[in-house]
Amino acid sequence: MAKICVIGTGYVGLVTGTCFSDMGHQVTCLDINEHMINQLQNGVMPIYEPGLKQIVEQNVEAGRLDFTTSYKEALNNVEFAFIAVGTPSSDDGEADLQYIKMAADSIAENLDHPIIIVNKSTVPVGTGDWVSEIILNKNGQNTPKFTVVSNPEFLREGSAISDFMNPDRVVLGSTDPVAAQKVADLYEALRSPILITDLRTAEMIKYASNAFLATRISFINEIANICESLGADVREVAKGMGMDKRIGPSFLDAGLGWGGSCFPKDVTALTHMANTRGAHPQLLQAVLDINQNQRHRAVAKLEKALGTIKGKTIGVLGLSFKPNTDDIRYAPALDIIRILLKKGASVQAFDPQAMQASQAEIPDLILSQNPYDVARDADALLLATEWNEFKSLDFNKIKQNMRGNVLLDGRNIWDGQDLREMGFLYFGVGLPQPEQLA
Ligand code: NAD
Image: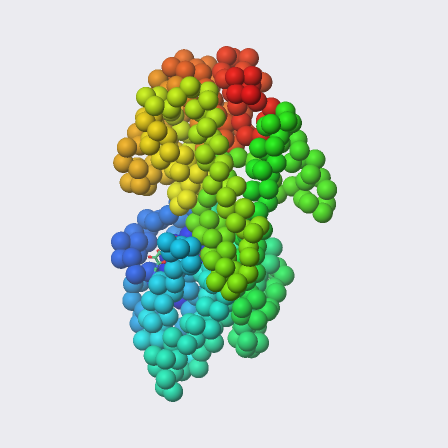
């Protein structure tokens, strides 16, 4: 059993702390957000992640997991301090490291014994060394022995617990093999492959992995756009491609493009890193451009189908950037809604988990009670996030409630032929287009 502190109780930190406590370790989770910590101390989850509440409760009850805002308390006698604070984008695309700096400063101020600092946040290459410098500069020769190990996280929101407990691999980067091995021992019970590299390489593995996944999606979206102009079906194209073992089937779903708390900022940060070092990240730039264009293509399709956006009522199903999360960071739905509002539409939406947060971002957004309420008096309906509950709707009821008949299936989850037979003007992404749109 190890004594661990996890700094930052967002999607990564809370899941990391909870899972380590579930593996039998003694964990204190720390955040500077007092409201979040209050909620956690009272058994309220500050984020929506399937299954999380139950495991948190079990481990709090077992006395292995607690929450604090005090660095002094959290760092007391711990062997490992995991950093899992946010690393959002700055205006110029560079990763904003202010929260990492704050966390490093606070560790330095409260460090009174040897410790291994494990960085789980996604950070630009070289940040591990920079964190070491911050701590050494603060305490000078009096600094207790410490090592920084990079341990990028690959979990996905919506399946975060299972991803953490069953990782494809654990990546550890350090110049200190003893420290890296100690962190590896924490993960041993998961029986997954562990790759130990130097610090900078581990940091790069995370960016390269996210950039590659984003590239696959932008690639299939580009193919989808070509399919539309040639009358081919991208779903079958992706299936046929994915059967090739060299290609594989995942991350080949055409749609409205990627969003979320990771891909947009990570691809942008990697592009920024490359540019500032004189490299020419042409592919990454294209990946970003294609992704942005998917939002505009969706609006253009609606515009063509409706004649104009101005004065129309458009219903949107799904707001979170993907199903099974309440996270709306860089959500395609929100980008599209902003463009529609700007063009003079009225937009009403429903999402199982992300309604309040979305309205806080877009006050003009009208919230609906359920999918049928979204359809009421709508000229067009856009499926933006493929929550399971949107997969089999009562389209007779939808049709009765709608004023118009336009359905844009932004995730290709519905049966277009059935819907066309029912009288809808149905179109998806990368599918043969109805005559009205050709
Ligand atoms: P998040 O925004 O959900 O949570 C970050 C938390 O850190 C917040 O609760 C914030 O209050 C807290 N915080 C900020 N400064 C702090 C400080 N000085 N001390 C203590 N707490 C502080 O972020 P997230 O989505 O969990 O992501 C965290 C990191 O993990 C990012 O670098 C992200 O790129 C990476 N990551 C995220 C995911 C994901 O799916 N969300 C997956 C893999 C990696």
